[in-house]
Every structure is written in C-alpha cells, then in structure tokens.
Image (cartoon, rainbow, N blue to C red; front, top):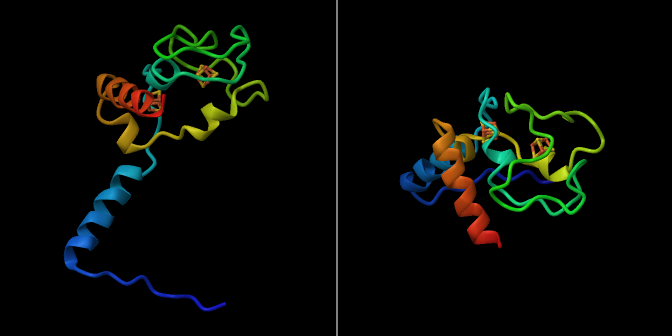
Amino acid sequence: MLLQRPVFSSPLSLVTMQATHDLNREVNCRPDCGACCIAPSITSPIPGMPQGKPAGVRCAQLLPDNRCAIFGHPERPAFCGGLQPSLEMCGPDREYAVRWLNDLERQTS
Ligand code: SF4
Ligand code: SF4
C-alpha cells in the first residue's frame, strides 16, 4: 500500500488543523457535570425511558451525583458510548457544555 504524506497548502492550514485537533482532543469527563445526559435527545430506549429521552430532560439513569447508573451495562444506549468527552463539547464548565449541546440539538433536529 502506498502511504502518502499529507500536503499542506499554507502555514495557515497547519494552524487551522492544529486548532481543530485541539478541539477534538479527548479530555476526562468532569465530575458532577451531566450536561450530555440532559441536553441532547436520545431516540433509543433507556431503562426507565422506553421511548428514549427528549432534549433538556434529565435521563432516568443519571444519578443525583450526575454519574450514569448503567455505565458499562449493555442497556446503556450506544449514543452515550459514542459521545466521548472532548474539549469542543465539554469546554471549561457545565454551562458551556449545555450551550454547545443545545446548539448541536438545534442543528440536528
Ligand atoms: S458534557 Fe463532557 S464533562 Fe459534561 S458530563 Fe458530558 S462528557 Fe462529562
Ligand atoms: S444512560 Fe447514562 S450515559 Fe446515557 S444519558 Fe443516561 S445517564 Fe447519561
């Protein structure tokens, strides 16, 4: 297989790629946040929410300390596993994450 080196057209494209990479960088989930278990809608069944979850509604599996009660269990929707923490989504605080997720919800619904 022929491996090609990436071609950058200008130094600016390098800067843009670096910025995008930084935003997509994985970060650790913040304790006591839960923004991504409240703001987005989830269309697949969740234990206690057989029809899924509307946007802005707290998931039935979100514990009072904002941890997932079914983390690692097969009943946890695939959507949740796909939503990895990132600098772009989680930002510096919960308020940022709620705003970002609300914007995403508006764009995708
Ligand atoms: S928005 Fe990010 S920090 Fe907040 S609960 Fe979700 S993954 Fe964790
Ligand atoms: S199932 Fe767990 S991870 Fe998914 S939205 Fe509910 S509390 Fe969050």
